[in-house]
Amino acid sequence: MFRPLEWFLGKFSTDMGIDLGTANTLVCVKDRGIVLNEPSVVAVRKGTNEVLLEGRAVGLAAKEMLGKTPGNIVAIRPLKNGVIADFEVTEKMLRYFITKVHDGRQWATPQVVISIPSGITAVERRAVINSAERAGARRVFLIEEPMAAGIGVGLPVTSARGSMIVDIGGGTTEVAVLSLAGMVASTSIRIAGDEMDEAVMGHCRKYHNLQIGEQTAEKIKMAIGSAAPLEQELAVEVKGRDTLTGMPRKIQLNSEEVREALLEPVRQIIGAIRQTLEASPPEIAADLVDQGITLAGGGSLLRGIDRAIGEETVLPVKVADDPLTAVARGTLRFLEDIEVFSKVLQSGEDH
Image (cartoon, rainbow, N blue to C red):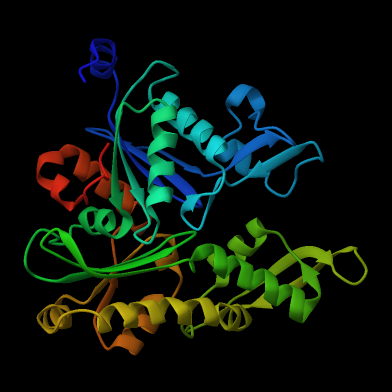
């Protein structure tokens, strides 16, 4: 049904692509590229969903509060494993991001393309659409993350030639073989950057009796983490709380220990890649011998992960240029050419 007011306001709204990630949310708009890249974190008053700082304690402002809030304030991540865990807070986060892109204009009603994990249910899809609509979007398209990442890194997704994308995000790892604007085979596992951080936290607790927070674990992973032996091993000083005495303490942690801690999540990611390759038709598998595997997402920045995957699959593996923004760039390309790319949507995904 044609709604004149909605159409009129839409003329003054900026359509956007949103990579709604467990760890970070990226927003991009036509002709401007990525305009916003902030953590998917919201600070609320405990017992309520009231967002602090008059609704502005979202993203970077809220992430600084993670693990450091007084008892009456909670910094929460409303998405878990790539899906909405807190419907109301996700809606408020999306509204904040949409309003920020529109320079504070509350009445904006943009058309929005949102990336979602390929393994989520119909109910979870509906939750994303509802959250975006309640946050002000007039029309919502959903695109699966592996397809968005493939489009974003420039893979020939609409051709008959098979190509493979592995998107290692914060909450999920998405593996897909793409051909003719569709996913020939895909696997989505809830093992990714967050699981790696938890593995580092578990290692420090088990072997050093040291309790550390999520942000510290992430910094360790980025500073000295690896999936394959390094030419020169690294070390870092880690501070936390002694689990036996309860007192603050610091230790030295080396990259060999962290690699050992990350072994299990890396092994599971490689297992998902093997599973997807085994499900691919022979003709597509033949294409992949030459095309190889392209890695995207923040997890692809883990040192040596391309080498570890290459050794297991015996295929060429490369990390995409600017892997952190691959999915966001894919949503933008989709937005710019909706007529061509709308065929990658399954029925019922546009609304």
